[in-house]
Length: 166
Image 1 (tube, helix red, strand yellow):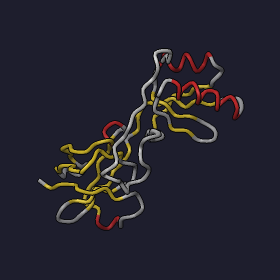
Image 2 (cartoon, rainbow, N blue to C red; image 1 turned 180 degrees about the vertical axis):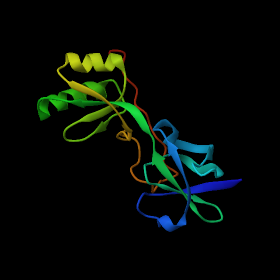
Image 3 (cartoon, one colour; image 1 turned 90 degrees about the horizontal axis):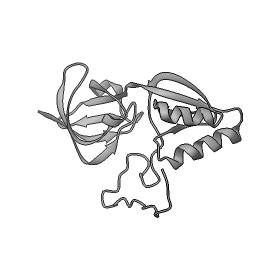
């Protein structure tokens, strides 16, 4: 079985070496070792040194040559908007306080569909629209950016005091 042993950041590899592609949702794009089948039928093993968040357009370099392109699958999402930048910032605080994965830009926040969170946000004045789109949320504060991984680094997670609520 072929092995994908290295992640090539989107835009850094020539498409002429592409041998197949895999379409993965957000959760499936965070892996270290996993058997995959490309859309063209290539059966291969993702075999990375560390769990890595794969982004749309990244390439998986195969031992023996060739690259499998990573494609982000569409997922059911909520697009959250607000009446002003300050209102959107307030909504972002409430989302972050619940430790929800979110893709954030100047005018909107994308979240996975969740009727409880949707009700909370609407109650706080948000406008919520459902859509299907690729989901690529912000990395956590302890997630190293990019693909140049320092394999000696260990992630430290914070704890909450007894008065912290979710």
